[in-house]
Image (tube, rainbow, N blue to C red; front, side, top):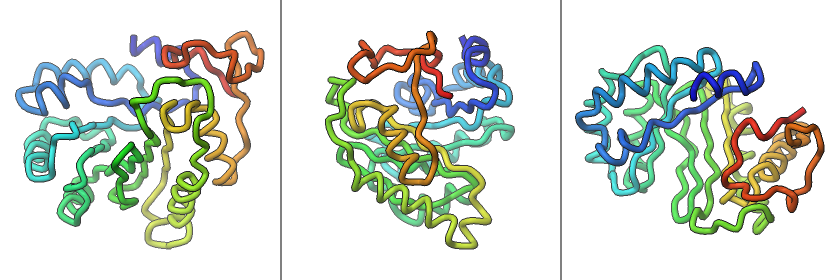
Amino acid sequence: MVKSWYRKTPSRFKFAAKFPKVITHDKKLANIRNELDYFLTSIRELGDKLFCLVIQLPPSTKISEGLELLDRTLPSLDPAFRYAVEVRDDSWFQDLAYDFFAKNNICMVWTQLQGIQTPPVVTTDFVYLRLIGNTSIDNYGNIRDNRITDLQYWTNKIKQIRMYEEASNMVKHVIVSANNSYTGFGPDTVNSFRKMIGLQKLQWEDNSGIQKKISEYENLKQKKLHDFLQD
């Protein structure tokens, strides 16, 4: 499957691959040697297309438990990869967490989720922003909320990185991903963000090369990565 991802994506495509749920949620980073070895061995097939690996912690994991689990897991991680950690509890939003991530060269993911928003603190040489929104809503395919104010907030934070010399010298890459649940249609969120940041709009097409309207995409939640191309 991973080899197929490599073959079916453009040469410059980059992946941010999340650790499997069995590692992060079911086992909560405890007794994971077999699962971790299998995952790392498999994901290496992405080669130079793999940008980073994401450890998404469960919403129930607070900073006291989470830092202990991460500290115990770090020696088992392959230093050849970049790592990012996504937290879902606001107990993490303090210097104790920021210092831990910076010390271990781990990106603290900037997340906007229903009910929680990560402070835009830079902890390593890349920034990873995940625009998730309200995942309880599943009527994807139509724009429910353009979230212009929220998108402007995040684009301003990224622009500020360029303005401040210390941050500008540190941050070499910025990754932004958008779920369908954020505004109702991920590709539209991408283009709104790109416009605000000063990039050209992308034309999303299916593999037949025919431009489609939002209403023509059926069952968007089940679309696979290679079903979409962009020029």
